[in-house]
Amino acid sequence: MNTCRMTGLAIGVVLWGSLPGGWFPGAWVGPAVRAAEALSQQPRLQFFNRSPEPADVLWIDADGRRTVVGRVAPGANTIVDTTLGHRFAVVGHSSGSEESVTATVPVQAFVFRPPAADQLPAAEENGGEGTVIPPPARLKVDPFHTKYTSAGGFPIVASARVNDHALLEAAYLVNQLLAARPDVRQALVDSGTRLCVIGHDEFTTDLPEFAFLADAPLADFPGLSPRDFWDARARGTGGSDTDPYSSCGEENLLGFEGDPYAAECILIHEFAHAIHLRGMANVDPTFDGRVRAAYESAMQAGLWRGKYASVNHHEYFAEGVQSWFDDNRFNDHDHNHVHLRHQLLEYDPGLAALCREVFGDTELSYTKPAARLTAHLADYDPATAPRFQWPERLEEAKRAIRRHAEERSRPAAADSPSTADPSPDDAQGPRP
Image 1 (tube, rainbow, N blue to C red):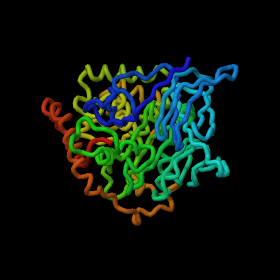
Image 2 (spheres, rainbow, N blue to C red):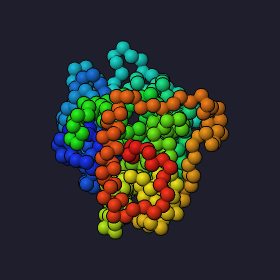
Image 3 (cartoon, helix red, strand yellow):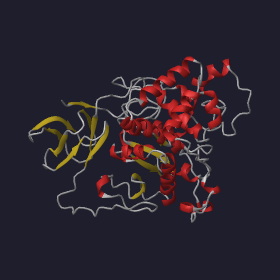
Image 4 (tube, rainbow, N blue to C red):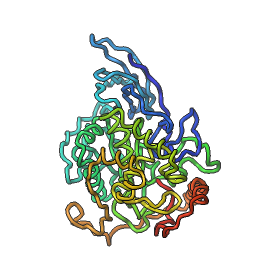
């Protein structure tokens, strides 16, 4: 049996309130995810219509009979609850253009973008390892993205404005994070996940994957335009079980001057969400429930009080992953003293055990590119790098977002004042 439901993509940041339709913002874990809800145990196939016309989604039974299970407007998406092995066709309502897909993993996305009638099929590229090439036709990426590299088959894309080294650095980091789990890497690929690099002079809503946010209503920030809110809020996004797109800022990957998150690697945090909600979700259906149980136990024990790891179990895991790889800020409005693996093992053994389960004993020991100009960075010259700068239009939104983060942290800080030296990067903004 296949059931269809439309989803309005509503990416969230922190549990500041609910969006229309009951969606709770889930701290940049991605669109349409209810932060208090466990992942569905029912396989789900999400259809993205990237064509200019409405498209019908049809289920094909074992005898080849077709049943319409939904219609998707241009630029929209719908989710079908299904069974692994079930086949579907997506058909353009006016043109009759057709593409097909089979449900192969529990969390899966499919993009409907048939070539124009007068367009010759692009040559299929199987390369991209260690180099930057045009995106392969099979990815069906928006023409906005003209660059592609592969991290062991996992796709990374960017616009022409992005330095090639940023894509190669992203691939290096993805390969490090997935070094112990080829099964998780394949699960991410099968789920339709990809990573988008945001140019240092681009902003979240500039990317086609997130353009809808420019018109998404805001519940808790009256007076701010949705576009300004989202462009100020995030220089990276994690994806979720209903969002196959992760992202990270070029300036953070390459360590540009002015990077607002210079003390940490945002990709490690954001890609941890994709690993959790699209990788492990497809490999081990018990994993999300075990993360939730560890989170609830930690909250009952008073751990992470008022800090970003306390927002929900998605952020709890991603923050733990950063500390597992010795890459977190500390003693600021979003963090306590824990930022290194040995501290995590002592402070929250349950979270540390989950990190070890996924990543093994892989050691990343992250440092900024300027300190390791070898291998894929051998011909990168940091002296030629541009400076990241927030546009004036986003200053008001940045101040409002910062106030929210400080209000979340203030009660805990009053109860348990830190006795450690403050983080040298305490002036940074809230978590992306």
